[in-house]
Amino acid sequence: MTEQRGEAGFKPRLSPRPRQIPERCIQMKLSTERLELRPLEERDLAHMQRYATRPAFYRYIAIEEQTPETIAEFLEKRLEEQHDNSDRTYFAIEPKDLGFIIGATRIEIRSRDHRQGDLGYALDSDYEGRGYMTEAVQRLIIFGFEELQLHRIWATCDIDNDPSWHLMERVGMTREGVMRDDKFLRGRWRNSYLYSILASDREL
Ligand SMILES: CC(C)(COP(=O)(O)OP(=O)(O)OC[C@H]1O[C@@H](n2cnc3c(N)ncnc32)[C@H](O)[C@@H]1OP(=O)(O)O)[C@@H](O)C(=O)NCCC(=O)NCCS
Figure 1 (cartoon, rainbow, N blue to C red):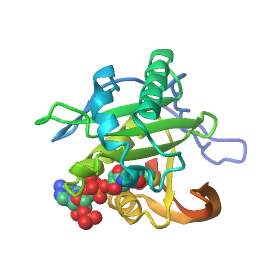
Figure 2: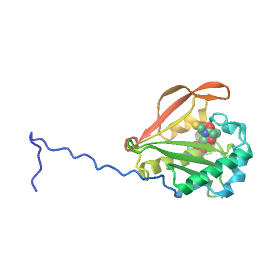
Figure 3: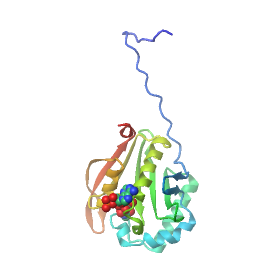
Figure 4: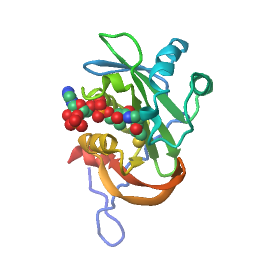
């Protein structure tokens, strides 16, 4: 077969085949060594009401004081979204040896044209310090690049939320900078770190 050449005699550059980003986020179960990541369920409510109403849980998150009622509303909205196939996918994090939720992680398609998404996470403080969230977020990033066909996944956290930015660095995200006064949280303006990971970073 003769090699095709452009008018100027150069070999034409083949543009990479555009990847298809799904119409909606995908609801599915994922598995890691120690964890099941699965859609949220009604049975998660009591566990979420136990851990997510602790002030330390939402200290750095831009939400009001959490009560059993606000958590019930939150879960109800997430269950509706799952049903409606929104752009956002939440995964309940369930250790295989426990069989109940100890936190949740979320990924959201933010731009189809630019294949951008962001992620978030929150863990029951009784289960911190064991690497569970690192394991969950590592799997979520693979899901974002392989299933959702994202090009870049970003996340932010309050600059004082050391466990959160430590986690982002552990999973291979790069700090892009500080977003100044990007949140008004409990009476004061707060700065956030912006982190991201590119699909190509995984090939380095
Ligand atoms: C942010 C948050 C998820 C971090 O929790 P975490 O327990 O530090 O994260 P992990 O579950 O990944 O555990 C990592 C810790 O376990 C340790 N660890 C133990 N075994 C590990 C393993 N197998 N793999 C990785 N880390 C392990 C790590 O060294 C690390 O501890 P260190 O920070 O003292 O070094 C948690 O603090 C949280 O949910 N906070 C409340 C909600 C919130 O702020 N969310 C983020 C909003 S931006």
